[in-house]
Length: 171
Image: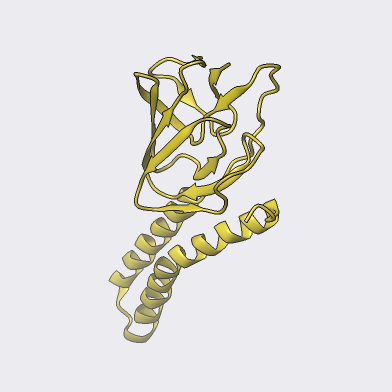
C-alpha cells in the first residue's frame, strides 16, 4: 500500500468520517420531518442532539499537519498525539484523548508500536519516512512504544507529544 498519495489517505479518512456521520445527519432530517409533518416542537431537541453528535464526529476525525524535526542523529518520533503517562523499562506509554487529532504517524525504524483502541484504521504498515501519515485512530487510545536499549529517551512522564513531531528518543 506504500504507493498511496497523501490525497488518497485524506479521501480514505473522509470516507470513514462520512460513514460515521450518517446517523447524526439522519437524526437531524428525521427530527425536521417530524416537526414539519406532525408539528411537534420538541423534535427540535433531536436536531440539536444530531448537530452536536456531528460536531463530535468532525472533531474525532481531525488530522493535523506534521512538521518532522530535522536532526543529524537518528530519531524516534511520537506516533500519536497525547500525553506521556509512563516511562518504564524502555517502554513509553502515551494516552490519546478523544478530542486530540486522529492521525497515526510512522515513528521510525527499530521501534515497536502497539495502539490499544477500538477504532484504529491503518493505511500503510511500513514506510521509510518518519512522521508520515500511516493511519487514523478516531477514539481515545493508549500507545505503547518499545525503545531499543542503545537509544536515549528524550522525554519525561507528563510531557505532551505531537504525532510526527515530538522526539521520543535519540540514538
